Length: 250
Image 1 (tube, rainbow, N blue to C red):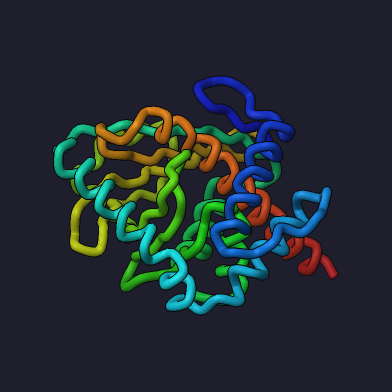
Image 2: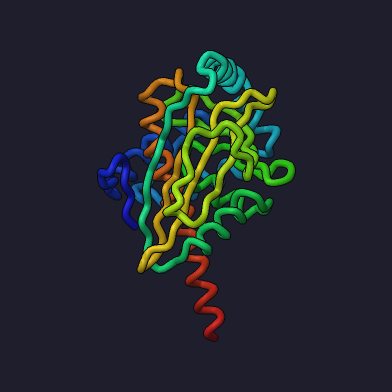
């Protein structure tokens, strides 16, 4: 897999370094001691197992005071930004899988409730605390975005493009698009993730919109957040495809 931010390669070492820092932060937020482990993948697994032990209400209560403050800040940014936006974008190239397979797998992870999907979505990024289906074609997210010291809760309605500023690129045959709103309905941005087939696999452009008054450092830092979560999701979807292909040959 190749990952690009602003046209520059993101190395495996860069991603691991960022992930380790965020893992340490997540254990601290949850009031737990980080295990002394060198293997980052195992550490991610331990963190996800810890998060899975919390019910939704318990996790919300754990973060409630910070969510309240984070929500106030985001609401002010959104209100005074009007329709103006800033953008986080990260690109991916992956061989051995199609855009159709990636989109199908992505929709399944975002919109279908299961313990397996919960674990995968928590494992995709240390800054994820809740990712769960909500209503019809919706998803609730509680996460730390970019380098924000505060978490935010928002709800994405997929298929709704109302007010999005990221244009559709017709070179990409498929997309997963949605508007992000807070619980009171305040629009805080949205997503337009686009997928296209290549000769050997798939190209993905992950894009997130923020209110323009959000700090530029937060928006830029969210690009590595996208690199972390999408690289995990894309690899998992490809691995599932390969496992299914092998099973069908038996």
